[in-house]
Structure formats: C-alpha cells, structure tokens
Image (cartoon, rainbow, N blue to C red; front, top):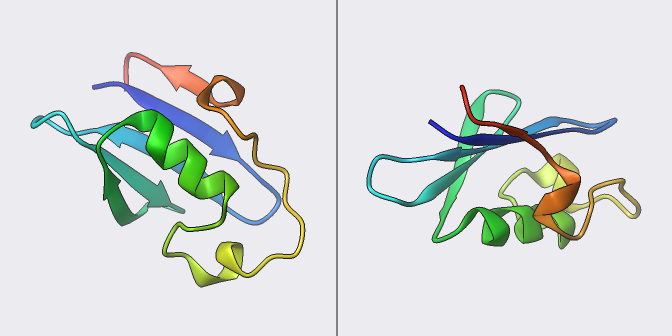
Length: 76
C-alpha cells in the first residue's frame, strides 16, 4: 500500500491508497475524506478542506500546496 505522510504542528496527516484506487485522508489515525487522487487529498489539506475542524479553521499553516512536499512511503 502506498502512503504519503505530513507532520504539522497541529496534526499528522496520511494519504493512504485504497484497494479500489481511491485515496483516503487520515488525520491523527482517524479517516476523514476520500479523494480520486492523492494530489486532490494533498490539495484539500493545503486549502483546509479536510473535515478536521481544528485544521480547517487555522489562520496560518505549514502544509505544502503540492504532494511533492509530503513524505512518500511505498512500504506502508
């Protein structure tokens, strides 16, 4: 299973592939939303549309705009 990880000052985000080809966004080990692509999930974190209110209401954050700012884990 392929995963992308991002640790921030507020939460740990993980984008995890599903067997059906979709991508789940996890926040602090809790699933939140499902996306068509990993890039869409990373973008949701950046634009603060994650389903995690604490993150989504921040005025400033450190998340990158693109998936290439996340850590890729092919052996997850």
